[in-house]
Image 1: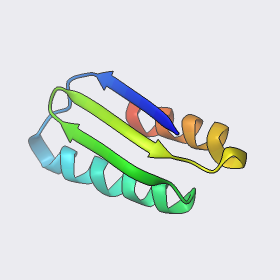
Image 2: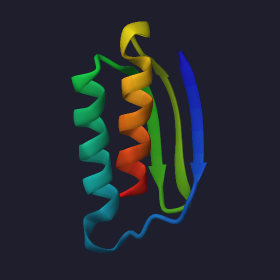
Image 3: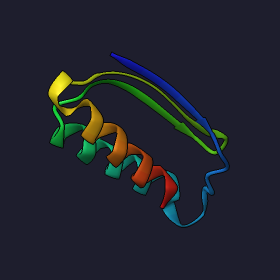
Length: 68
């Protein structure tokens, strides 16, 4: 289980929040992640259960997705 929060400004223009939501959903499905991720213009907060063997890959992919 992991918990994370990232305080960062996410623009609500050009469907950025919706696009990020869709990308994170695909990422969670890819790595068999269950949990909740809250996305808002002021940042992201999440709690998730990630298979141990995929945890490091999920963390790297999550960071890459958020930093794009």
